[in-house]
Image (cartoon, rainbow, N blue to C red; front, side):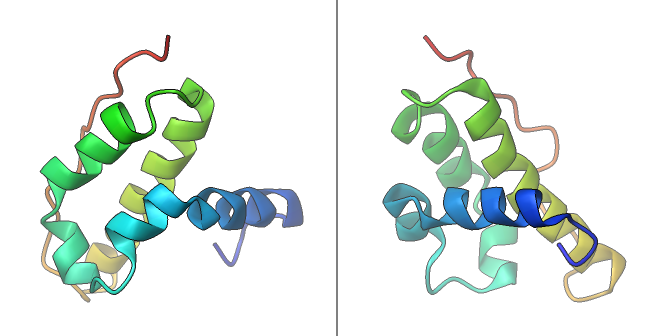
Length: 90
């Protein structure tokens, strides 16, 4: 997030202020989230199904991008959220 512009950072903060997103992620360690593929898939495709594909895609990118960076830095060995598909919004 350090390299993101001000508008992108505001979007990230807004997405993570969503109560449903906070409920799933709050109080979890990065290692916990790295193994939560089922919970994150449910969040994106069921809990947030009324939101646009762009919004849900942003949430997915922020979560997986954070985990990817943690893997690159050696904080976690790997994560299971790569390749997570979004069901199209109705």
